[in-house]
Length: 153
Image (cartoon, rainbow, N blue to C red; front, top):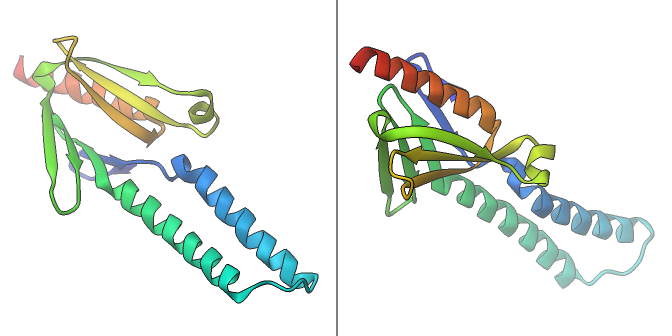
């Protein structure tokens, strides 16, 4: 999470979400290195495919990470999705009633999770998915909401 001088918080999906993929790449590459060390014959095509697969997984996870971003400014929460075709949703603090943190066991172990921002209508929920330290993010939103309502109410 980045805090800028103007009290804007920008977040995107945590890299911790992709730990199983990175672990899979590590095991694949470690297996190839081990086979080379004990001088087992390995097909060149298998090595090329393994390296290509590893690069592909890293690129896809990074693209997936930057597809969604969230910004909290002095007036609203802005959700952006996409690279070429961008969808943007703005949730004004006047419409926000509360927020809720949801974490699975895996997310709690690695300190990331989801934040649901509720508007006064119970059907309208904005889910901010897989961000680092969701409790800190929720506290930041609450401080911004209090400050906004104090200045405008």
